[in-house]
Amino acid sequence: MDLRNRRERHHCWTVPPRQVIESRQQEGSDLIKPRRLPNPVLASPQHKTLHQELLFCHRRGLLPRKGPELQCVLENKRREQHKRRELALFPPSDLEVKLRRRQQRLQVYELEQKKRSESLLNVPEFIRVRGTLKHIQSCFS
Image (cartoon, rainbow, N blue to C red; front, side, top):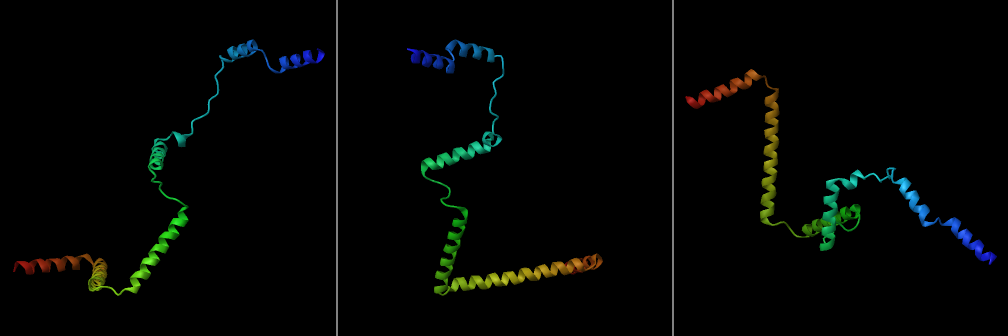
């Protein structure tokens, strides 16, 4: 019996009775209970919309990217190299040759236009105005 009484006493001391807990809660009701501060990142509307979009894509099975970004870049480079090798095996068609020639001519023409515009900027203003006046007079005569 003596052990039984000790256990009950020990139990009484470790766990406070219900009345004591309720009285402590009533005393604490006057105090302001602390709350966690909201995380500004999680509370932002951009984060919420992004999260909703990711959940939507996950449900439909359209995940944005699988694997790290570096791996994706390396895979893209490998694909491009493979395409270049395939194109190098076959001779270019007549259309491709003509398009390249035309592109080269256009680049040369653009470079000449740049040089002309730069040279006109270096010329004094009165010479530029005189040249335009001569052009205008010759058109009317």
